[in-house]
Image (cartoon, rainbow, N blue to C red; front, side, top):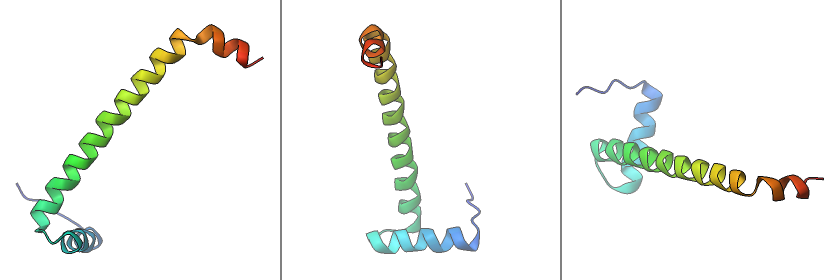
Length: 65
């Protein structure tokens, strides 16, 4: 796979890799994994919040008055 980056993106990637003492490839892979994990966590929080709002809707309504 070829990854085409702008000059700004290339500099940012190089800075990340240098700061962590890893290759640019490894920095790219870590960034992909971090975003995937974050999105999975955000989805879980959203789902848990929806369940709690549904379960406690009457209480939340009374508190809002």
